Image 1: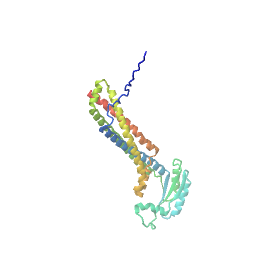
Image 2: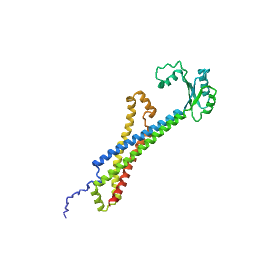
Image 3: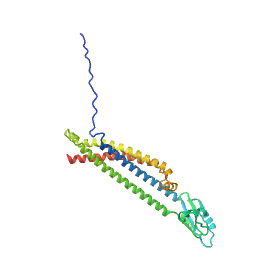
Image 4: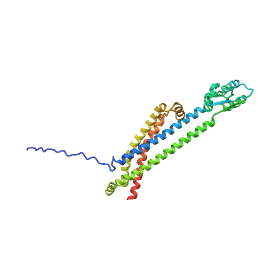
Length: 312
């Protein structure tokens, strides 16, 4: 028997790639990516500013709390230099004090220059003198004892800078609360933009939604498709915006000292340090990205389900 070998024909097994229900690339989708990137950038900059102010406030409070000042006013019949030496000795004998130093006459006159101007001859005037007292641990320093001891020095008063620290904390707290309020407004604006974009996408794909309903697709399935699409949009926009926010702080930190005058740069350094976010600040900005992506997905899903419930 002759065996006949018939040619074998391979059937094409490659299935055509399924098109997504929600179009991957559209003008509305690209616009939403750009919008979310901008909102993420603003959120990152706001959050970074809050982190900088909070870190600076902690540093301010710590630095101010580790120093107290003894002011000695001129008193008739008293020798200023003798009173300064007595105040320094009393401060150094106080528990918790690490060092005490009387400012020289030239240093005291320099402190008055911002108010009186440079070049003013103060040699004929008896100006108050200061003793700067450094504390090791403010909690261990016996400040009441120092106040009682200074009562023996005529014209001496102790300034613990408590009022100044309170003003610094109030100012920093106000800035932090304002930043969080701005961040909340940005999130609300982002949610509103996602809602309008989702409803616009639903309206433009109404025929697809009707066909899905006709073949038995549930509202949950359709909402899931839109949720996945908007999750991708939110994640891409969040990555772009978050990266731009980190680059922004790096560029500001590198160029602030070269562009801003020295005096203004020193003031900015006092307020914000060196614009160094640190690891915690970068982590905070990075955390904005998944939050924005999840917010985009959840908002789109809720909007789609509400839209379908109203139109079905």
